[in-house]
Image (cartoon, rainbow, N blue to C red):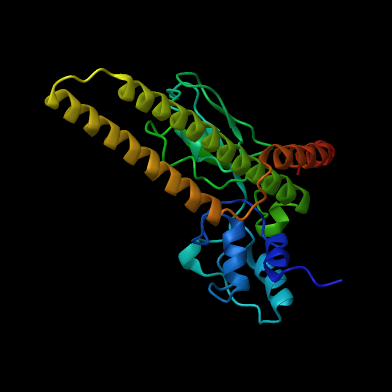
Amino acid sequence: MSPRPLADQIEDLLPQTQCTKCGFPACRPYAEAVAAGEAEYNRCPPGGAQGIARLAALLGKPVIPLNLVNGIEKPRAVAVIDEEICIGCTLCIQACPVDAIVGAAKQMHAVLPQLCTGCDLCVAPCPVDCISMIEVTPGRTGWNAWSQEQADAARLRHDFRTARLRREKVENDARLAAKAAAKLKAVEAEAAESPEERAAQERKKAIIQAAMERARLQKEQQAAQAAGPTGMPDVARSVRRGIEEVDGKLKQDPQ
């Protein structure tokens, strides 16, 4: 049996907080960059010194200090929303990489602390500054403040969210395409008697056709760049099963 790809092995050693402090949009891109030699293995503050030691052992390299440009190692924190100030703008929900915030537009939001990875990505977008990061592991940092089960659960939730957003975009693009096609058909059916009316009709058709062509090209580019499987419903179901399994373990050992 061939060994697992190095990027997969590196990703397994990351805490999966999806905090972007490493300079990459998520843990997986960082793992791929480290595997390719394009990024150092000391850029993950949530993993801390122990995380660097784990990566160094895998890579056969020396243990080096955490790059302070990316942050400092500190106790794990969770986000807390002040319900008296929250205006229900949903910006924090959109920013959360692991779906740890619940709420609806113009309704008070709440963080599910057992799901929060402490990434703090929800803090900056809040327009009323109602989100605070509260330490929950005083005296414990890095992997002493985080468990493999929590990391596995966070990765599953991040993957599920990514799959959901991709599916929603596909569905929305399909609705827009159908709307554009209907509009084009309606324009073509319009009665145009004078040269001016026919010219205006042609302009409308050209605008709609150009928009449809841009959408088609964008769809092709996204399909070419997609690294995951194309069966989104099946992916979502498999990820959901994984989440349920890890959630069961976390309920037995919340820390």
